Amino acid sequence: MNYNHLIVIDPQYDFCNPEGSLYVPNAEEDMKRLSKFIKKFDHISDITVTLDTHQYYQIFHKLFWIDKDGKELPDFTEIGIDDLLEGKYKTSNPDHMEWAKYYVNKLGQDGKYSLMIWPYHCIAGTRGATINEDISESVKSFALSNIKKVNYYFKGINPYTEHYSAMKPEVEYRSDFNDKSVCSVKSREHSNTALLDSISQADNIYIGGEALSHCVANTINDIIDFDVIDLSKLVVLTDTSSPVKGGEILANILIERLEILGIKYCKTTDII
Image 1: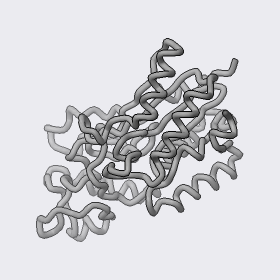
Image 2: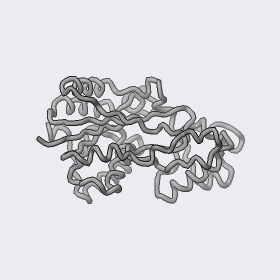
Image 3: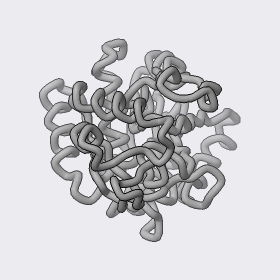
Image 4: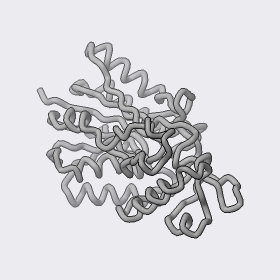
């Protein structure tokens, strides 16, 4: 029998519930379809669930930033390197300004997204970080019926870098830019070699979750770019993932890349 590994990206309240702080349109229906897939497709060998896990003081939250007049920045503000060099925006903690300049500049050099101030979301210990009820139920059923553990991967814990992808952060954190008070934050999120090693053993790697434009896209792109996984193993479940509002173009770019590389994508109903 084939070894099939399912990766569920960030199936959390803040993304999947209409009352969530960073709700992805249609995500609750995506989760119902993904939950049904978990229950109906009896050839799943392993499940990995990734979980965005943040705190209020995070480089992409407004607590981290102020404008030139010392006022809080509104959500969805984009920050570029020129904004920092010209003094338009600065870090609320002056000790972190040099890191912020390096970080934002590195995003631009690497062709990444501009740094975005997102609404507070998936804060550790809050309802927003909890797993969608449909997914929670189906994952529980999987564990009980198969007598095996489910793998959970918490990402985004380091407050000084973004971590869209399950595979690595947007920029590798360097504590030498910050003061001694943050040196205890280990830069352990450079790459998720444990997950890579695990899925590399699979015959098929199914991927779903939220959001198609960001965390799902970045996870898939990193798997491709690491070039250690046979791409014929990848199967993207398109009816279990939606883009954030305004992120439709990014989702389309991902699908175009899948087509160019011959990576399989389909609906769960094509499988079960």
